Image (tube, rainbow, N blue to C red; front, side, top):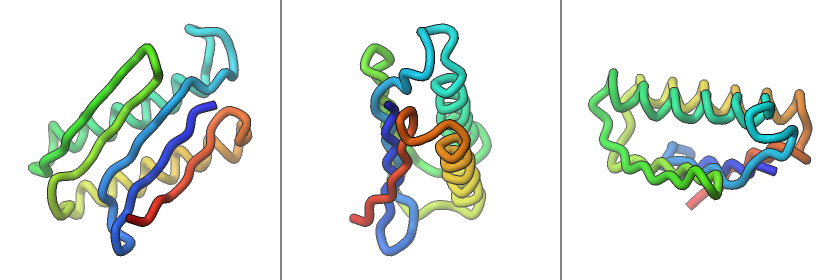
Length: 108
Protein backbone atom coordinates (compact mmCIF):
# COMPACT_ATOMS: atom_id res chain seq x y z
CA UNK A 1 0.00 0.00 0.00
CA UNK A 2 1.10 3.56 -0.71
CA UNK A 3 0.54 5.91 2.21
CA UNK A 4 0.34 9.60 1.34
CA UNK A 5 0.49 12.17 4.11
CA UNK A 6 -0.50 15.74 3.26
CA UNK A 7 1.18 17.93 5.87
CA UNK A 8 -0.55 21.16 6.91
CA UNK A 9 -0.03 23.86 9.52
CA UNK A 10 -3.04 25.98 10.47
CA UNK A 11 -4.81 24.50 7.44
CA UNK A 12 -2.05 25.58 5.03
CA UNK A 13 0.03 23.14 3.02
CA UNK A 14 3.55 22.52 4.33
CA UNK A 15 4.33 19.52 2.12
CA UNK A 16 3.57 15.89 1.46
CA UNK A 17 5.10 12.44 1.77
CA UNK A 18 4.42 9.27 -0.22
CA UNK A 19 5.70 5.96 1.11
CA UNK A 20 5.51 2.43 -0.25
CA UNK A 21 4.36 0.69 -3.37
CA UNK A 22 0.65 0.19 -3.95
CA UNK A 23 0.80 -3.54 -4.63
CA UNK A 24 -2.09 -3.32 -7.07
CA UNK A 25 -0.13 -5.22 -9.75
CA UNK A 26 3.40 -6.28 -10.67
CA UNK A 27 6.03 -3.59 -11.23
CA UNK A 28 5.55 -2.08 -14.69
CA UNK A 29 1.86 -3.07 -14.72
CA UNK A 30 0.68 -1.20 -11.62
CA UNK A 31 -1.73 1.51 -12.77
CA UNK A 32 -2.31 2.76 -9.20
CA UNK A 33 1.41 3.28 -8.62
CA UNK A 34 1.73 4.94 -12.02
CA UNK A 35 -1.15 7.32 -11.30
CA UNK A 36 0.30 8.28 -7.91
CA UNK A 37 3.71 8.86 -9.48
CA UNK A 38 2.34 11.00 -12.27
CA UNK A 39 0.31 13.19 -9.91
CA UNK A 40 3.08 13.70 -7.36
CA UNK A 41 5.93 14.21 -9.81
CA UNK A 42 3.89 16.52 -12.03
CA UNK A 43 2.96 18.62 -9.00
CA UNK A 44 6.61 18.88 -7.91
CA UNK A 45 7.84 19.60 -11.44
CA UNK A 46 5.09 22.18 -12.08
CA UNK A 47 5.85 24.07 -8.87
CA UNK A 48 9.56 24.00 -9.69
CA UNK A 49 9.15 25.03 -13.35
CA UNK A 50 6.28 27.52 -13.31
CA UNK A 51 6.45 29.10 -9.86
CA UNK A 52 8.97 30.76 -7.57
CA UNK A 53 8.04 28.69 -4.50
CA UNK A 54 11.06 27.13 -2.84
CA UNK A 55 10.75 23.38 -2.21
CA UNK A 56 12.86 20.60 -0.77
CA UNK A 57 12.43 17.19 -2.45
CA UNK A 58 13.79 13.81 -1.38
CA UNK A 59 13.19 10.56 -3.27
CA UNK A 60 14.06 6.89 -2.90
CA UNK A 61 12.67 4.93 -5.84
CA UNK A 62 13.57 1.53 -4.38
CA UNK A 63 11.52 2.14 -1.24
CA UNK A 64 8.82 4.15 -3.03
CA UNK A 65 9.46 7.35 -1.08
CA UNK A 66 8.83 10.90 -2.26
CA UNK A 67 8.97 13.79 0.20
CA UNK A 68 8.25 17.37 -0.77
CA UNK A 69 8.30 20.23 1.72
CA UNK A 70 7.73 23.94 1.16
CA UNK A 71 10.30 26.35 2.48
CA UNK A 72 7.90 29.27 2.90
CA UNK A 73 4.40 30.58 2.36
CA UNK A 74 2.86 29.12 -0.79
CA UNK A 75 1.85 31.16 -3.78
CA UNK A 76 -1.72 30.93 -5.04
CA UNK A 77 -0.49 28.81 -7.94
CA UNK A 78 1.20 26.30 -5.62
CA UNK A 79 -1.95 26.14 -3.46
CA UNK A 80 -4.01 25.32 -6.54
CA UNK A 81 -1.54 22.61 -7.59
CA UNK A 82 -1.66 21.11 -4.09
CA UNK A 83 -5.48 21.22 -4.06
CA UNK A 84 -5.40 19.38 -7.38
CA UNK A 85 -2.89 16.81 -6.08
CA UNK A 86 -4.96 16.14 -2.97
CA UNK A 87 -8.17 15.83 -5.02
CA UNK A 88 -6.52 13.45 -7.51
CA UNK A 89 -5.01 11.21 -4.82
CA UNK A 90 -8.31 11.00 -2.92
CA UNK A 91 -10.09 10.14 -6.18
CA UNK A 92 -7.65 7.27 -6.80
CA UNK A 93 -8.17 6.01 -3.23
CA UNK A 94 -11.95 6.15 -3.69
CA UNK A 95 -11.75 4.25 -6.98
CA UNK A 96 -9.21 1.56 -6.07
CA UNK A 97 -9.54 1.29 -2.30
CA UNK A 98 -7.46 1.88 0.80
CA UNK A 99 -5.76 -1.49 0.48
CA UNK A 100 -3.68 0.15 -2.31
CA UNK A 101 -3.57 3.86 -1.43
CA UNK A 102 -4.31 5.68 1.80
CA UNK A 103 -4.40 9.48 1.92
CA UNK A 104 -4.11 11.20 5.30
CA UNK A 105 -3.80 14.79 6.43
CA UNK A 106 -1.44 15.59 9.28
CA UNK A 107 -1.73 18.90 11.10
CA UNK A 108 1.63 19.99 12.54
